[in-house]
Length: 308
Image (tube, rainbow, N blue to C red; front, top):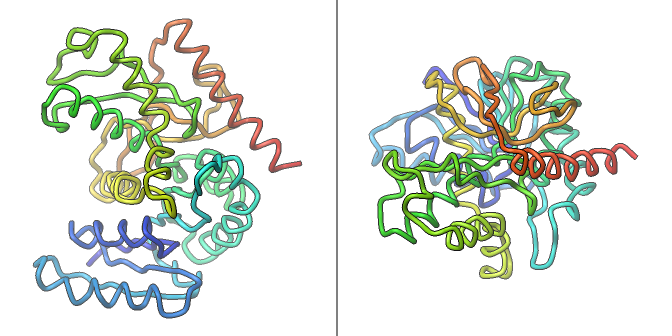
């Protein structure tokens, strides 16, 4: 295949992302992890499944970060997962120690790659990856907004008994408890959600969206979500490789938009073959803007904590 995607982290999120990329026939995939034999075994398993997908492509496992070489897109998933009772900020310094060498390897061996960061705390890790590589801001982005919006879409579809494909939701802000679901920009088949559900149910769905990851952590007890996060990252990979020019919420570097500067946070963007092609500024109400700024402060505080 023409395209190459390197997935750093062979755990549940990374291996699921590699699988989805292979199933869609988007690219040759290299799965990289420090555990000897694990990415090799998973990649061999995918290679053996490839004839059944009728997609072709190669699937390779590696323990060497240098094997990101030549990647068009890098998906960064490696990191410690959340455990019950653990906040994303608890993961801050431990996962920063994983991000830095990975970012340095990408800078050295895949200097033209686009990067999709999934590692938590996501907005802070995207900022750290960007800062470490020195890449232009349009080539580094965090996955969260698509995932958070997908969770809201799922909850609305469950509530109304309709296809989630017809639900379009918008969730901004940091990928954490202070994320900002926007019912005003959420529709079902083009119909505003406020026309279909009472405010109290919308508020409950919005809160469940904020707690979407924690709900799964609590149920699993020994892990965190991976199917939806992986698929959300792959949506971004496909948008870049196929130049789809989609409008989706992603964590990107703001330089004055929404009155925010110098941090990564989820906002709607135009995502295509040149990565972040445009940041779209919605006309937010005073309450919505205040919620976004509060979420941004939480991210900024973690960036400051990491720098300190």
